[in-house]
Amino acid sequence: MIKLAKLSTLAAVSAACAALFGATSAHAYVYGVSHLKVQDLAIAVLDGNTGNPTSTAQGYTFNQANTAVINSAGGAFTSAACNGNAALGTTNCGAGPVLDAGVAIAGGSTVGRGQNDFSFVGTNQLQTYSHSDSLINSAQLVGGVPTNLEQIAESLLNTNGSAQANVEQQSNTTLQTTIVVGGGSVGSVLDLSFLADVDQRSQIDGSAGAYLSQTNSNVTFTLTRSGDDGGGSVSWSPQGTAGNNCDVSGLLAGVTCIETADGSDLNFNTSTSNNPSAHDNSFDVGDVFASFGIRIFGLGAGTYTLALNAVSSTSIVREVPEPDALALLGVALAGLALTTRRRKQA
Image 1 (cartoon, rainbow, N blue to C red):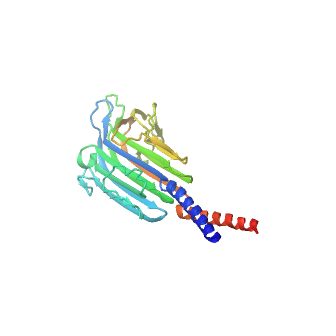
Image 2 (cartoon, rainbow, N blue to C red):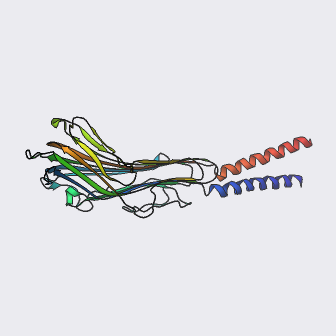
Image 3 (cartoon, rainbow, N blue to C red):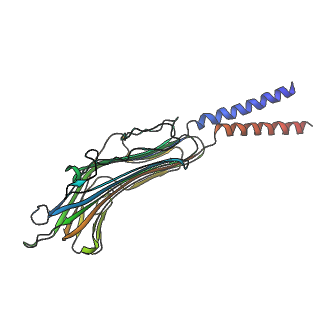
């Protein structure tokens, strides 16, 4: 009877440990999402005096790369590229969409994502996944309408390990700028404008453990004059702040740049390791667009390349004691307690 009582006590302690920690661990998740949507991106190069177009578009290229991985295994990668020459009317880009690399879904994901479905999968507490996807739906030099693109990286862990998702889209456009000499010419003016919605969230909610959630959004524009024409560049990273965030460098004498609109921060990192917590940047489930734009003055005759680079990424880590391990710990503790009791009685 004494032995049976000891076994019953041991089982009760073990079951209590498993039930207690199992219940809390089942709701321990770490989550990250970074989403960007750009609409009506338009570029115009005009004579500074007359306002008439003064640039001839030359070549253009588009590149996409989507990656997703869970626990450094079963990683997924998709990519696509196309190019053309607007002056010659040649291209291997699509009519609509212009470029679509396809969704990347990490091996080990328990829920997928439809291609070109940019809705948030969210924090379902039964799922683990890592996805990324990107799309260039239209492009000004390809179809004659403003550029529209969208991308998302999203990861969720309800099991221990790490997950990352990354998406990058690049666009390079070569412009041949002609200056009309005379009449007090002040060079060419480049106008760039667009609407954008950025959504980022790092979130942790769970039992005791070690967590980390980070997301990144990075959007930059760079106008570079070729070395044969003297070199130099103008760069811009929208940060949602008042003031002039354009930087002019190199041999671009007389060139100036001003912001015409900078509605939110498109270059932002969210990060948290606290439990529970959430760190957001302009996070909305629906589309909430802000306006952006720059104007570059005094561009001399020459060949320029305008480059757009947009990156969205997530990186998350979860380390929580699992129910099986805690149950074994309970067995060990109960056994140790019974052994100590027997020694005292002896």
